[in-house]
Every structure is written in structure tokens, then in C-alpha cells.
Length: 320
Image 1 (cartoon, rainbow, N blue to C red):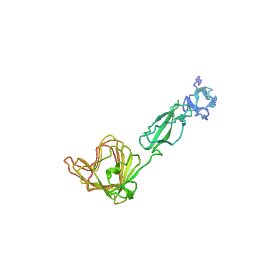
Image 2: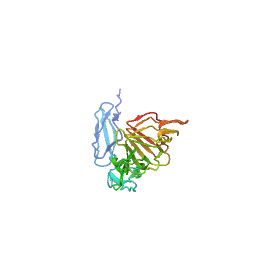
Image 3: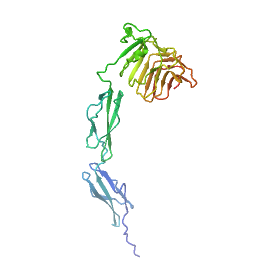
């Protein structure tokens, strides 16, 4: 009886990825291989991770009958993936400053890899405030870098900001230049509020009616001198203040009591605002004792449009 000879080679199983990938300059650690009969597996070939290219590793195992099995793995050495975003250099001043009403010209920005830089954001030089411009650049590997610039729109240094005083009976020279020379008429005092940042100071109790703030297309403040400062109706049937027409008025009522006005007009007894461009702030104001006697109703404040900001409110009977 003849025993058949063993001619079956070991089957080699490669562990890990095949093909495998390693970045240039990195260390390649081989996952190895196993033989189905438990034979020892040897490997030949090298992987030069300093040089981009494809390399072959050959695994071999020989059984007791001298049958040898082989398998190969391809290892690709590749250029490292680019995960570094462009560095953006903001040119010129940061933060930058431009005067109210001037033209802002941006100095731009550059990217360290020469990528195209785009900018987003706007600077409204008609309105005092801080604005942010964002610069972006994207490289060939789709990495995006960003940087920002703050642009401050400020009141011109040569602008004269007025502080005007008004009281119920006036005082001194009645020119509004100080508490002791206060105007005796609210409307006259308001006519002197002509520029960004002006302040109208109320001394004691001052009456008025029908003050239209629409033409004051800038930021100004009507402020009480002390805790007794009050604006009240003069017995007429209109509203104390109205904003009704295209404007960018930004008015702040501060440290005041607004009281005692009874209007026959619909809406607000103290303020009627119907323009989206207006900004109105009541800061530490006591709004009380005002009434609307009209079939359409209303309250102290009526806002159909615009921006309303109330700080430390003391309000009664309002309609917003």
C-alpha cells in the first residue's frame, strides 16, 4: 500500500489592511500573517517610508512535507494629508477706526499660501458702533482659515456735542448753556439738539406736547438732572413725542418721569413710533399717569415698528 504524498501548501492569511497605507515619514508597523497549519510565517521585503511609492512584503510558510505557501501585501507610502489651514494676515490697523459719515476703505488681508482671501461683513459708517469683518481663505486640500478685524465707527473728534438745559420757567440768560441759564421752553431747547451725542437736560418739571422726533436722525439723549425731573403734558390733546416717518433717530430717555399726558389720539400718550429705522431706549424712567381717550385705544407707549429697549422699567398702562 502506497501512502499519497502531501503536496498541499500552507494557506497564509494576511492580517490587517491589504493594501496598507502609511504616510511619508511615519513608522510602518506590519500587522503580520498566519498559516492555517500553525507553521512559522516569515516575511521578506522592506518598506521605505522616507520615499513615496508602493512596496511589496512577501509572507512564506513551509510545512513538514516541505510544501511552501506564500502571500503578499502591498504597502503604499503616501504624501501626508494636509490638515493645516491657511494663515491669514490682516493688513492695516486692527481694530480700525473710521469717523461717522466717512467712507471706510478696507486694507484687506493675505494668506500665507497665496490663496484668495474673501471678506464678509459690512461697516455702516452712518451709525456709531463696532463692526466685524471676517476674512477667509481655503487651500487646495479644502482647509479654511479665518481672521477678523473690528472696525469702530466713532463720532468725529471735531464734533461739538451740545448739552442743553431746560426748566419750567427758565433761568439766568435763558440760553440753555447750563442749569442756571436754562431755556424756559421745551421746543426751543429741542431745536438746539442738532448732532450725534447731544443731551437735553430736564430741570424740575417741564411741560410739552407734540414733539416730533422724526427729523433727529442721529443718537441723542433726553435726561433728567435729578430724581425730580419730569416731563408732563401741557394740557393739549396730542402725544408727548412722535416718530412717524423715515428716520434713523436713536433717542434715549434717561432718569425721567413721564407723566400726566392725556391724548385724544390713538396709540401712545407718551410716545408714538411707527418707523422701523428708529431706536428708542427708556433707561430708569417712570412712565405713569398717562391716558388715551380714543376709540382705537392705546397706552403710554405705542410701537408699530422700530426698536424698543427698556432698562430698569417703571411702566404702567403701556401698549407695545
